[in-house]
Image 1 (cartoon, rainbow, N blue to C red):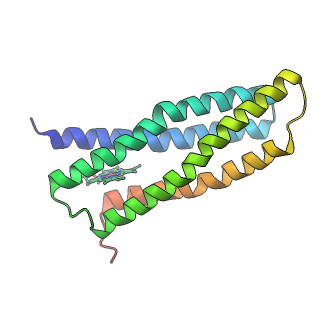
Image 2 (cartoon, protein in one colour):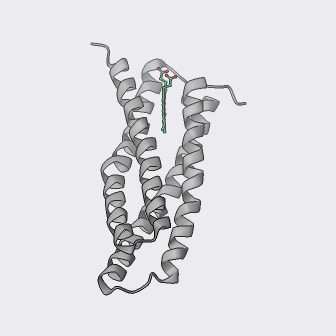
Length: 157
Ligand code: HEM
């Protein structure tokens, strides 16, 4: 049996999971934040953290593992420019995503406490959400760039 198409299918499926979960949870989190219902924000933040552990972290590992396996099997140079740029963008996206997970966990805790005590959200919540919002963009744009690199495999230098 030829392993390559199986690896590639897993790689592409996993990329949709990584990108789709990221975009979907970010939309859900931000829309709930804008509506301002503290109980709903607490519940959404908890689900978003869970979705990140279940789907984003697993696909985040599957992606480079299947990718490197295909590089070896297909005989691409691991240092070709499109792959080097992929590594850079992927690491940048990962560096932005890690604090995002931490911020989501803190937001879940803060909002759950505020909902239970029926007190308004503190300024630290709004600071966390602002940072969360801005860290999401480089991760999103980085992954869009990786999709292009994967598809076009351009010679960049
Ligand atoms: C992080 C290290 C990664 C490596 C080493 C890697 C490697 C590869 C390789 C070698 C291929 C070519 C397969 C072929 O044409 O037969 C490929 C295809 C693909 N990769 Fe990656 N990849 C990585 C990350 C990602 C990420 C983060 C995404 C998206 C989130 C992604 C999405 C895709 C897609 C959609 C294809 C299919 C492109 C096509 O057939 O035109 N990859 N990858």
